[in-house]
Length: 354
Image (cartoon, rainbow, N blue to C red; front, side, top):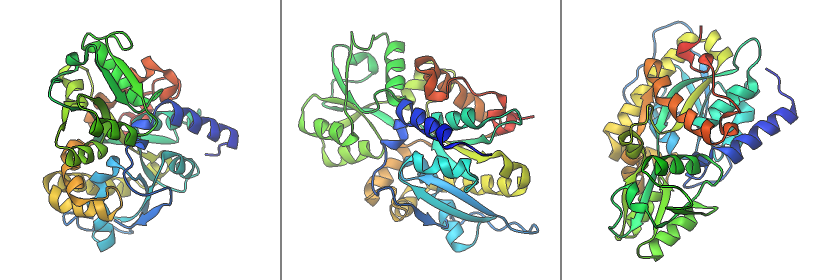
């Protein structure tokens, strides 16, 4: 599919200002220079099928890629079911142009940005990209330098520091506060900072301070400051408050043309991806070494602690839409532009496409 420069620029502006900060603010180490890795775990073995296919995968330097490090190791060892070329990028705006120009086949994106790309590239012939899996649930937590906050209801009368103004973190936090009987701006003051490091510094230096941070920043702050703790895991709060979906951070998408042309290669990728996520969750100590080697987190102890706190998952098929759709609806209700102006249709979900 061909996109004009004007359309591509508009699409990126909407996505980056209206909703992908949950992932982009969660980048620990490294800059914008892509680090290409052929990637993998010890589990998958090559398919005995005919010709192997090179699957070009774009990932982000942050929590959404932690679950992929097993596959990345397998690709290095040549034991994947297909040949994988994994390149990590510092920000989503580096990935989207490659995806829409057909220079990558699979991409790991913030959930709302996946919906934006779907909306902005869809034609009468159908979607250019489709969602394959949810790869990461919520990575946000409420942290406190103290012990008085045990639930979101305990934030009444407090000031909460956060990043992500006008983006997913704001919409998620305000939604959960309202569900907890609190009115943002009246019962709770949310003071937004431009960088997660600012929130981290305030938490570390101010007894009683409360802030919202993504992984791996939350784990790093706790490791360096014994008085700081996780007061509320927002992913668990989302479920506890009865939302008919899950709190989602990352989605894996594929170009529809690639899915149509190479269905077996895509099925093999999904099998290796699932094995990778299982390996990372089951063996965090071993996986942490790979996470650091991939440049996703700076220190092994932080990576090991951040893995379970990042809620790495592999949700596809019948589990994909129920997990994702309600989350996108919350963002749409807060700001339609954050999901591309409208809720995705049935053909956004590869398993539901006719």
